[in-house]
Image (cartoon, rainbow, N blue to C red; front, side, top):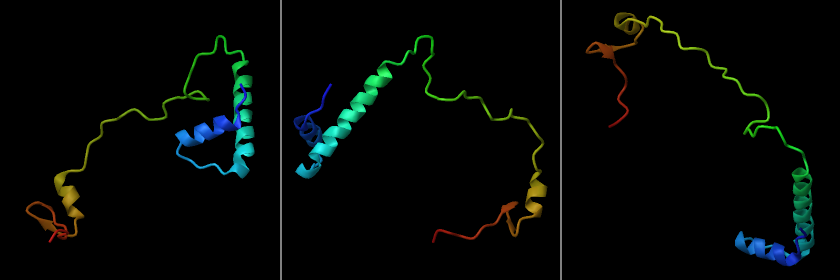
Length: 95
């Protein structure tokens, strides 16, 4: 399939772009190069290859969740700079 300057004008109009006449030939050639590359890719034998969204094999790198004993309430408050009503006291940020 060969792209013409008229096709480029039409694509530019659909994209709401202005292509200067001085660059029309360059864009036409670039569109044709892209389509030629797509033709090459269509010729690649992909029989027996399972479709995948990833190029490389993907494995889960996350560790299993392990239940551990948490910090007690008293231990947590021990390092607090200020305590109020058995909780952390923080500066007011809303007036």
